[in-house]
Image 1 (tube, rainbow, N blue to C red):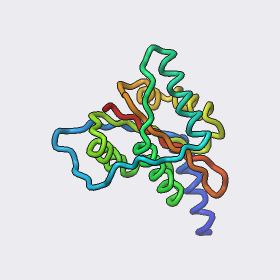
Image 2: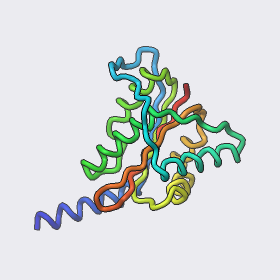
Image 3: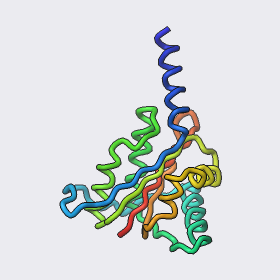
Length: 167
């Protein structure tokens, strides 16, 4: 019975989260201090590269600047995907810490984040984000840089974290 309740709770959580969400934060002058070093190496998979290409293509099509890719931001995205997979959740837990890190390490003055779960293609993930006002606001936001990670769990489900920064 306990196992069934846990399974039902997990399914309810996934449905309630609507498979994606958005968050934003702006840096303050007295932002958190971090000792974490700049991550310069990140190896992108094809899904990540295609999703980033589609986001930039969309931005340019509506008259916005294309965003520059930063490996450090993608690394922070991948860390969050691993956290979500390990904890079987889709959320923005510790977004404040990721934002503070990007602010401290890269000098960002504004940071936003989109997450998504279980979209099989970059096109499907972008379509879902653009149909959600919060996600769309981040994609169309006043940002200059971004990072993205798409990580697949043991069951073959994809977790997306996309962080935007104005630097």
